[in-house]
Image (spheres, rainbow, N blue to C red):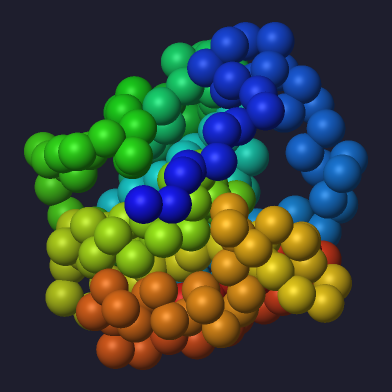
Amino acid sequence: MLDDIPSPIDLRLMPDALEWARTATEKRPYREEIFADFAKELCSIEPAVRRVLELGSGPGFLAEHLLRSLPAASLVLLDFSPAMHQLARERLVTQRGRLEWVERSFRAPGWDEGLGTFQAIVTNQAVHELRHKRHAAGLHRQAKALLEPGGAYLVCDHFVGEGGVTNDQLFMSVEEQQEALRAAGFGTVRLVARRGSLALHHAA
């Protein structure tokens, strides 16, 4: 059995969560473009998306963008870190009536229980927190089971390859990302955007 790769930081701790939130956009200024790509994909769905699940929602950066872009939608924000949820609550305080908070790790068995169904599930820079790429197809399979018929699964993470990152145990190439989504049962997998070291896919 291949070993999982430990994280160098503990995002459950407020100092680490704060540092990650402070530097995320500074390190990768193209994240704002990726957020716009997420919103464009979700806004193109008919009928309009009403309920969205975000996996690994962190300090609420993507959620903030989606709440602005999808005024009729509500979001369920799932993250394993109480510190990240606290930062997100502060960021999204004016939208609290449209939000549901779930403190749960998507690495844990049964993380998907009791959540209901969704027209869309999104995740940004979080799949690698499974701590090894071999777990990705399993996560995608669980996500697929939460989608309503015709629902959209938007998955963005770092990729291995030219212009991307180098750790090929934690991260996947674009082709491997697509293979993991197909292995989970998604019939249609489309590369939406590749910006910096991030690749966004739409699976359905």
